[in-house]
Length: 230
Ligand SMILES: [Zn+2]
Ligand SMILES: [Zn+2]
Image 1 (cartoon, rainbow, N blue to C red):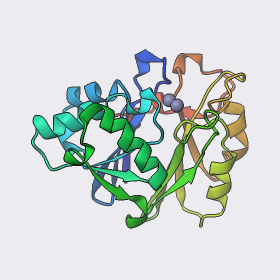
Image 2 (tube, protein in one colour; image 1 turned 45 degrees about the vertical axis):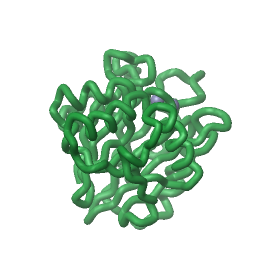
Image 3 (cartoon, rainbow, N blue to C red; image 1 turned 60 degrees about the vertical axis):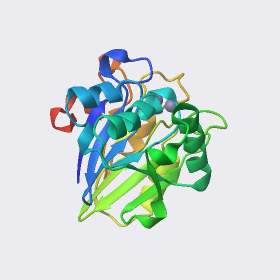
């Protein structure tokens, strides 16, 4: 299992591109989120044809803004097989479907939908309302061999996610967590809220402007970990 980020910024941190990652997992190449800078990054890095599966954390534009471009490109330019969108719930599948319908008319022409319950080693954490009021968001947990990778998605409070992790059998766990350095920002996780969870987990922050990183923050930022960047 290997994760490489295509961007690590927040919605307005243009210099650091939208947070998204490519995950090699059980023979699949999963794109996690496809915000408005992601399609360009994938084309520039010659990675579009590698993507076999797509997983979306939520429908904000910095997470799905170039999803339709990607699907159109794969069909029209690459003439590849349809990629698979893995969905955690029927309700979220319907939201993604309606979102794509407005842009490509017939989403089934471009993409296949497969429920997460048919895939081994990946589960979701329902974080509804924890990023934005009344808004559906998900975090995801991947396990392969002796390794666990956790991807928070946009999340204002880390407790649900880490509660779930403490109930799982111990494994070498890397948590990639949304982070903010502004205590007033309730839509994202203020770094001090992550401090109680650093024992037993390797935690990396993303979805931020790394130049704002306070000197007392012990959490490593994905942006500075070259081995984690695509
Ligand atoms: Zn975001
Ligand atoms: Zn968001």
